[in-house]
Image: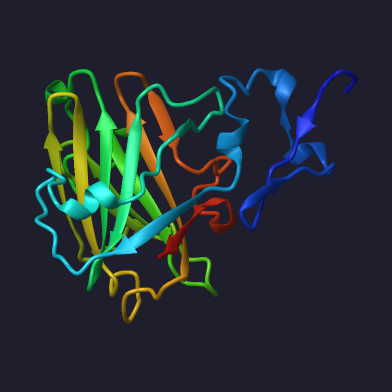
Length: 239
């Protein structure tokens, strides 16, 4: 082990702390897995979220003014820790009266030439040209709800990794000149919530993108290949 530096990352409030523990849980810097000066990207991530009293026109165009005011979640990292994602992805979240709204912008050189493989709901979306969001809204539970859409608008959802579960939510995609975009509207009742979250309440959340052209998979919060581990998801703070 001489000459090898191992770094341990732990999610603790809003900071990243370094400990010396088992090498089984460590990320060796000398392995070449840490590049592009993105150690800061591996730290615990938070995203502020605002409320709106306006409804959403679900068309994938992101024309609502509240999208301009929403804080962006960006700086995606490749899931194999080989560097920052080559394809830029930006996600935003806004709380509506009866549903949470999500918008994801996926930069792409030739978006109108994209095609997807999955044609039916709950198909192999994670290996398609697609995006996915993981949400854990319950403070005392570790249940993760997943909602995905490929570039052709085919949907995927799962509860606790079980894709046989299906919720009633809506989405829209659009292929633009320099990107493709997704809008989602997920009712709170689908997340088994009685109402919108209150100010300062916290959810756990993460965003994922897969790209066929470059065979790249990236995510906003580094989960260390554990997408259903609530402790590794980022935090969504309600303002």
